[in-house]
Length: 439
Image 1 (tube, one colour):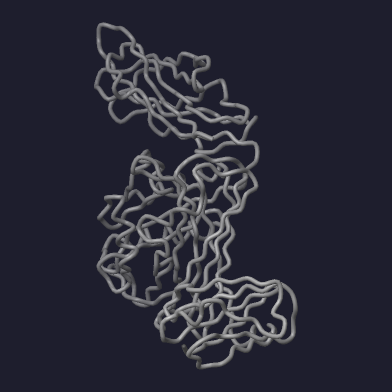
Image 2 (tube, rainbow, N blue to C red; image 1 turned 180 degrees about the horizontal axis):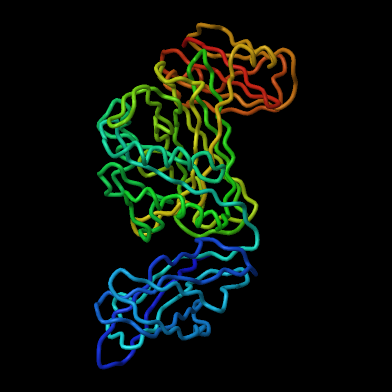
């Protein structure tokens, strides 16, 4: 389904004195509910000193009829002034995709170049709730960052707002985070990027006093992507395995990519212009999908009800407190070098340690060490098994499924692996068992 684009265009009027009307603070969700009203509204402004006295705002869906707004008369708009305008006809469409065009008609306006805004929208029958991704560029050296940091801390407490803080030039800087942030050309702190700039229509800014209102507005939209995260952490091996499953509720056509971050909260550390004992939150420790995200997870056009899965693995450094780690995952649409967050979710880590292994089936791998084949036996359970062999740095080198173990299961391809230490991970009936083996 092609996205719908919202435009706000100002029609030319004729008068002896030229006006220059334009629109700001207009927003339409990227995805919206079929058969449901969305109120089209904006602020009408004027970029010249001569007051704008009379105007109206119109909108049009794709090539449909123009919905003409009521004329509005004022005592005059100029300079930093604006006039709020609410269209008397709500946008309400059946499931479809295209362009919603909105524009202002100002008496005496002779400059049409700044009259139009365009918003992509997809009208869908089936949807899930939308969460908002808020990313901040910050640093412990930044004297102006404590207040924005507190703002995003408060935003992160909202279950439908997910915050990630990318640190730069300090002890919390991550190479993958720095590479990711470079796409926004916002190399200043503090700066904020919401929804990955919404295809370039919502630029980065430092106006942290506006971030909350903008996030609240975007929460009103919906999403065609349900994101489920299973983040399993083994404290013994320090291996984090993140399984992300995306269920699409509607057909989406576009360049969709997946990404996931490892975040750490409750991290003590210095902060310029803050009191001693400062605690950092939402630290981006690692961008698992890299700067561009993971492509190939989704087809060019998804289908309603389909599941798309991907797994990330990471060996967690000892200096990161696993009790304070969590994972966020987002589905992003890329278009012409810009991006938009289709949806985002977060999840805490689930410990897969000694306590949980005691509940899981007893796994035995042999021979260990081995110079050739590797076999598995399992005691205490039956049914389908999922066997993975991971390198010590978290890469999955063997992925094998079987209906049952039987007397013993040969791990296909293990004899061809390079010499080294590996982790054999077995999942069965929702439980996980792991064991190290030397090749």
